[in-house]
Length: 200
Image (tube, rainbow, N blue to C red; front, side):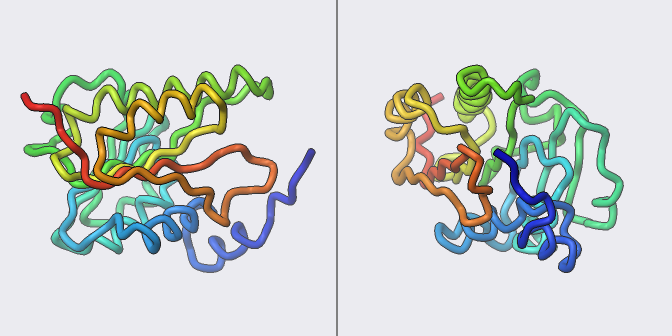
């Protein structure tokens, strides 16, 4: 099955000077769940090419700050955004906040990361879940109490089973498939509000 690469959201992103069509997924999530506020400290995992960075930078304002991490080379097209700091790094190799210049835990953790897909559905589902599991394991290190989480995941029974065990870590736990997700895609987003940090 194929899709038109230059679809409505692609053209809209191009027209509005966003780096990718994925901006509209975050915009819809934010409108529905009020994820981003002025002055927030935000961590964006797998930010490249950077449309979520662009949107978040605007939403959190000059008093906010967003840290973007990706394995790809730093996208210099984002260098004009003064409240943005980018790192070429493996998030899962980080041990503490200081490695990415943080002095406190973040208010919001965003992840639009996806694995390198193989086209084999079961393999891709497992790889996606592995990323999400890694994020949840590091939440106590990086996300503050009452913080918010937005993370992408590929649909599978394994994912449902895993997330059922994680929902108690948040006061509210939601699932959303934004309109911007292509019809052929099995991705959806997990939204956690009011993180219940384990006691140190």
